[in-house]
Length: 329
Ligand code: UDP
Image (cartoon, rainbow, N blue to C red; front, side):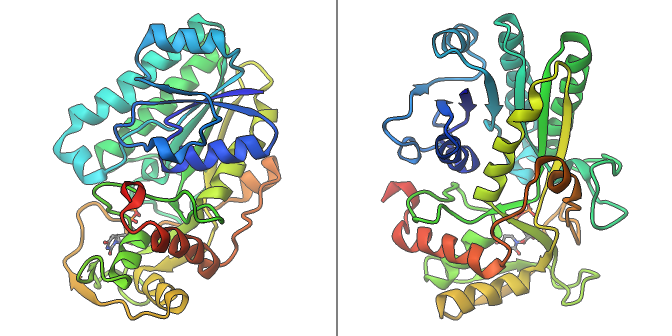
């Protein structure tokens, strides 16, 4: 199949492009390179530099490349920024997604895979979180993803769009060969920041809060390898055949780790001491997020290959050690 990967030069998109090729499909990438990196996509993969809301460009690609499925990774993901600049988030994450969907439907392309987030659940009442748990985002980022999910549901009924939505928990890790990995600017995510502190690239790791109602007082999160996330997306292709199919899956490992446990795991992998500094809680951080991933396992036959947090961190360590300046090196 020909798979159009919108945002294919970003962190999760670029890993997915590799898995699409490995699974015997043909990826075609569109990326604005606002957050993505051209070097993250192999030179032999068709690459278009442009915007997902550029209707004439997208329509041409859908036609010329005979696209079967559209995968959409092109979103802004910084929670704090979504609070201070909601127009940027609604404009990109919602309005541009709507433009992409309009173009697809006009061109008769009706299979869609969407990157969503555990942030749609807000502060959940029950752990682990099932897909049917109440959706109550606590920041504009999560709300924009939920708005897109709701739009997809309506289009499935009205226009026969067939979609899979994946709600990511904490995506992490890097390609096993260490050639592509996580490179955000600024980097806000835990594992890259712990590794940067271990490498001496930042003075210490700031731990946001040690007074949460958790065993060691730091937040619990569900870390899932980016290649495992990518494999779930490909496993969904077969189920998009029915017009109006509506698939929604949590993607997490199902095991929570605290911030302090992640620090210890990085120390074990790297053999280096990580200097830490405890600072006040970060606004909008729920104490615990952990996925119930039974639905993805049962329906997609998906099993996370990286069952061990140490193995996940090893891949991230390999990437960051070889690319201390990310793709800028
Ligand atoms: N965190 C931290 N220091 C950092 C980055 C993150 O203590 O430099 C904590 C954050 O408060 C949260 C967890 O690590 O409890 C995971 O944060 P991340 O930003 O990686 O992902 P999120 O769970 O916000 O999607």
